[in-house]
Image 1 (cartoon, rainbow, N blue to C red):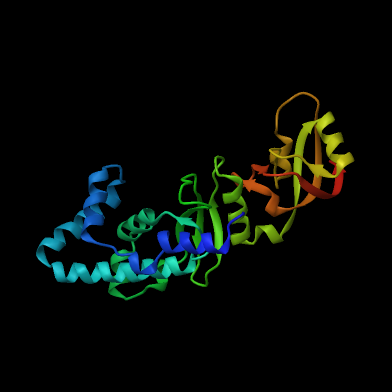
Image 2: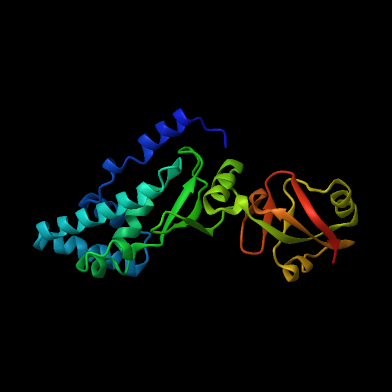
Length: 240
């Protein structure tokens, strides 16, 4: 990622200001008008909306509680250029545990919390991360349309860029021989951490091989389908 500190600071102030995060009745109304929610989520929003008519002061306390939770989540994501704030509000308002956690004043109970992120506010091809109460991250949903900058951001946040892992590939003999000779996986090559999955790739004259790579060089599109986002140096090449 090629973001200057000044630009990063500007993006943070614009998108993730903790003082600008408020959960409100308008959020409930807007979500109900979306009409693409699951029945359980819709019912929880209807309960909040109906109760507001009876006891607005109490519901405003709920909104205040959720706003505090949301601001705490955002504080943990301060280094991320874009986080889907609307999705955070929706998850807070529709969680099956919201009322219980509110009753117990249990802010920690919302963690780990799912968020969607990218490397730019203009980039809506987000990747799903879980943020934990200690400020660490784990990816739970990849995106095969995510930009290279977003993938590198996610790999850095999750610590993948500092890990090495053995991968398996199953490609033509020409491609595999070039990999062996150059000691490099080319960009946009599919590999897998699973030998069994890689061995299942169909095609004529496929050659199964294995190597150790830095995990930061791949996009984890699923648990078993990984794609290189740049030329990646390999170690310990071997035919399998």
